[in-house]
Amino acid sequence: MTRIAVLGAGKIGEALLAGLLGAGRSTDELMFTERHPERAAELTERLRVPSVGVAEAAERADIVVLAVKPQDITPVLDELAPAVRPGTLVVTLCAGLPTSLFEAALPAGTPVIRVMPNTPMLVGEAMSAISPGSHATDDQLAVVEKMLASVGRVVRVPESQQDAVTALSGSGPAYFFFLVEAMIDAGILLGLPRTVAADLIVQSAFGAARMLRESDDHPVLLREAVTSPAGTTISAIRELEKHGVRAALIAAIEAARDRSVELGRSAERG
Image (cartoon, rainbow, N blue to C red; front, side):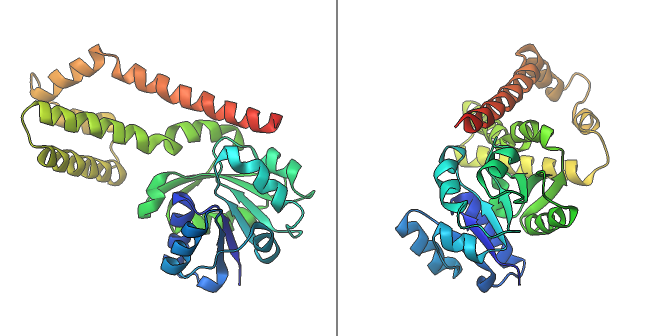
């Protein structure tokens, strides 16, 4: 039996626990830490997974998953380092923080795997990218892939690409939500009730996402299939290009990448 401890029971931590339970993990195999007693009690009651302290999690778990905010990592590592057992696999979901940071803080030789998930984990549709640290093996990568497959899709990338992944898919859902929000507002401006506009756009987004996943066609071809000569769609596309939406989106993702790099450097400086 492989015991997994999730350190930090926020939305991502909870989603991972729920996904593991849904994939057939026993509550005896899982545990979590949570600094707010009310939240810990509520989660234990709902999922039947025990809440423990960081030291106990380190002593009992074979895999320790760090699901805390990057700015909260130092006190967690201070508690974890003296208690973690040799050979325990440490999986970090902390945006922007390199594996070298954890390897330096934990006992020598501790295997670390860096993961960038995203919030669709809450509905079992996460996109997670994983990268090994200096001591993680291919077998350990496979274990983490299987674990994360219970809450979505998984891809392996070199750690040098993780800041780009953070900007693209880690923050990616927010870009789609922002776009949907703007489109709903446009529907209201055009005279539609908010609920109707929301239904129209959300279902359109859902259908478009399925077409992107299930079709072998490039997004350009899918877009062109909607874009008739002298029609409504091309008029809209012209306005988007006129206002530099494509360039703005690329610049925004570059800014997110830069912020991810900055978070990592700040954490390493302590």
